[in-house]
Structure formats: C-alpha cells, structure tokens
Image (cartoon, rainbow, N blue to C red; front, side, top):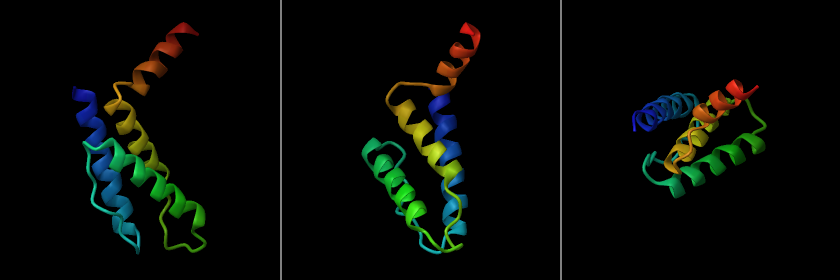
Length: 89
C-alpha cells in the first residue's frame, strides 16, 4: 500500500517537527501499532488542551497525520472517501 507509506512518512515528519519544537518530548513513534498511535494521539490532544504556556507547539498537523495513519491501518482511506464524496456532489 503506497498510501500508507506516504502517510507514515508524513507522520514521521510532523512528529519530528512537533518534538523539535516541544520542551517535553513525546515517546517514540511506533508506526505499526494502532494502540500506541491512539495513545499518542490522546496524549497530544490532552497536552494541547492542558497547555497554558506558549512552549507547547500547535499539534493540529501532528494530530491529522496520526488520524490519517490510524485510518489507513484500519483499511480506510479518507482521501479516497473525500474524492468519492466530491464526485457524487
């Protein structure tokens, strides 16, 4: 699956950017483990909602990349679904 590899590369890049900008580093990224990715998504979301300082970088792109990878690991391609929805309109 070419799309999953593309999503995983995007996730690795967003993860690195987020970790480089963050004062508190995230745990290691495990691309093939949906459970670990879900836990990471929850952790990032919680960190973002609890953050009151400017030291925590925005996590929107990282959360999007995590969600995309999780959906692909579950055999659902959101890009294809969006394209199919556009052609039906």
